[in-house]
Image (tube, rainbow, N blue to C red):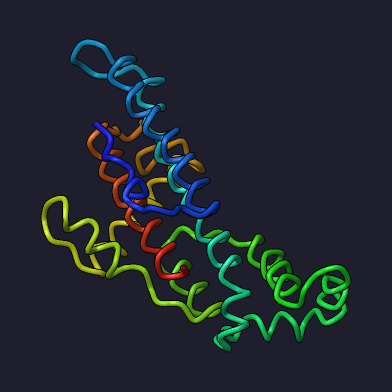
Length: 218
C-alpha cells in the first residue's frame, strides 16, 4: 500500500505543498489501481505496467513543480533577509528593462520573484544537483538531503544524504527512460519490467525530498 502522505503531519500546509500533495494523492490512486488491473498472479499486460510508469512520471513532475514554486515563493523573504543568491543579480543585470517592466504594478520583491519564475521556468528540477543548485544559487537555502534522509530513516533502514541523492537520480533516470524511449532495454529490443514495490519506494523518496525542500525554504 502507498505510504501515508508526509504532509499530513504538518499543521499548516502552504499552497505550494498542497498542490504537491494533491498530485501525489493522484499517484497513490494509480498505485491502488494497479493490483485491481493486474488481477491474478503472473506477468501483467502492458497497460497494467504502464499505470506504474505513469505514476512514476507524475510523481517526478510533482517534485519538479514543487521545487520551482517553493524557490519562487522564498524570494521575497530572501530579499528582506539579504540572502539572494548570485543568479538573481545576474538575471537582473541581463534583463534590466524586463525587470523594470515587472515593477510597474508590483512591489519590488514580487517583481523580482516573477523575473525569477520566468528564468527558472525554462529549466527542470529533478536531478539532485539541479535541486540543490537552484536552492543555493537563488535564495541561499540549505540542501534538503539530510532532512529527507531523516524522514526516510524513520520508516526503516537508515539513510544518509548521499543515499537520498543517489536514489533520486536513479528514479529520475528511470523517468527519463520511460518518457523518452518507452522504457526499453538497451538496444531497444524489449521493455524493462517495472513492479509495484519499486514505484512505491520511489514515491516515498519523492515525498520525503518534497517535504525537505519545503522545510528548507519555509
